[in-house]
Length: 174
Image (cartoon, rainbow, N blue to C red; front, top):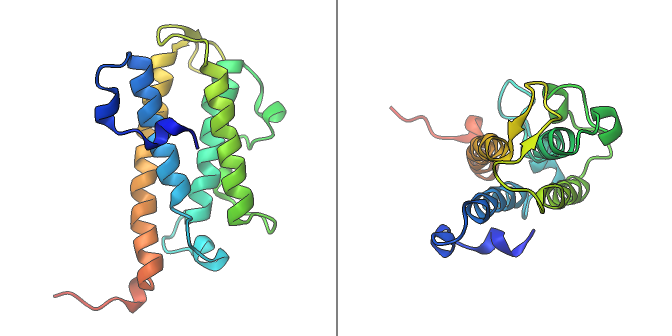
């Protein structure tokens, strides 16, 4: 991940708004990527909720999010061209060849491609590749930031469950 992921919010208080957005995005990108740190392949794939959500699946889904919002919406490339699923639900599906290393690498590459796609843009610049129509880059940043924050929360809870052994191993609290 880039150096901005290691900058604190206080480091960018006096920076332009785009730098602030990018710093917060990179912090969330880094946090989501780091949820897999130190886990076994089995732990990363462990399913603890009725949905398809696993730690490895969350990072794989975050790769999809990067490609939808910065590949499709910003660069106007199709999902087929980007090699991604038609919808978000399928982006949580894990293939046999998905490993912590391959999913993290794909996520890091997608994040870097996202940064490059918007490097020369201003927050008020319009992107034209979204089904909603033209959107300002600021809206895209806010949407992705909201989604990454939500998934970081999911990852925090799932990681805690995985490392503690899961709900079946927890003491009953009365």
